[in-house]
Image 1 (tube, rainbow, N blue to C red):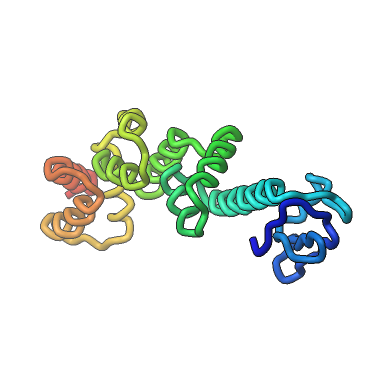
Image 2: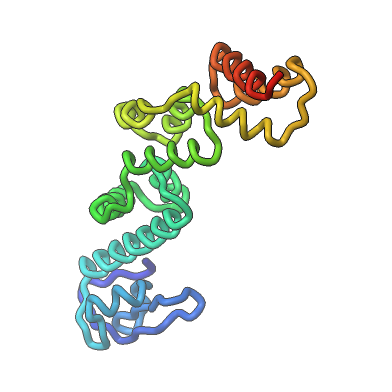
Amino acid sequence: MAFLCFMGIITGIREDKKQGKRVSIYVDGRFALAIDLEIAVKEKLRIDTELNSERIAELGKQDRVHRCYETAVRFLGFRPRSESELRDRLARRGFTADIIDTVITKLAGQGLINDSSFAHFWTENRETFNPRSRYLTRLELRKKGVAEDVINGTVAGLDDEENAYRSALNRVSRLTITDRRELQKKLSDYLRRRGFSYETVNRTIEKIWQERGQ
């Protein structure tokens, strides 16, 4: 905000073509602030509208909230996010904590941000496309900033034996295996990187080997 006045009259509203749908507001012939066109329309700003310093500050905050919200929605458009992920991203974009709080509250009210829903999405996605252990799934969700009680409720139903088997089948389908030792070598590290225990890995490899008719 380049200029604040105690009381003045809007003398100009100019579209800023370089910044998309934004307009610059001039009070008493001097630049006061730039805001989104949507806010200007909603607030019925026009030539000869009176503005004081408090109102200009309020409009500036509305604009920051609007820009923060639009940034958040674009970020969520790629995939669901945890609240912690979203807060970190918005903070890196330069938005202050009070603006972020306002936007998070709005998004939560719209059902666009919910850590429980995010945790289930993340877990189901992993189970479908890249099965891994309960331990590793828990660790990933913790790194996303999800609360421990939400994590506990989400991973409780995960079956390490089933997920290790499915993961191993997916891996074996792309390999040429000639003996038990080679199977052990190629699957052991692969399954351990997905967080499965030593015992689960060995049982899974044995099951795969037996099913291959060896």
